[in-house]
Image (cartoon, rainbow, N blue to C red; front, top):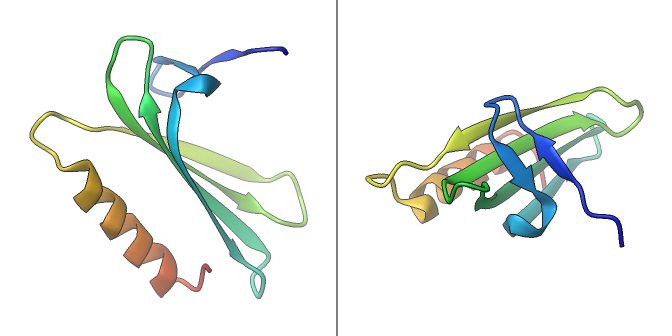
Length: 90
């Protein structure tokens, strides 16, 4: 099995095995997808990785948000889930 370590835009190394939560959304009317991942980078920092793109092309991007010690991960995830539902993702 091939394992990869990728560098996210923040410059933090992130290993695919470190994903703890994976939530996929699709908006079939607009032909888009959205993915939320939570995990830990190689230094132990909690992260939320947001990825999005088109269902019909290779277009897409990602954003990385570190979870600081004073932030509640569950509260941040709930806010993201509400935002996705409001924008038509299922």
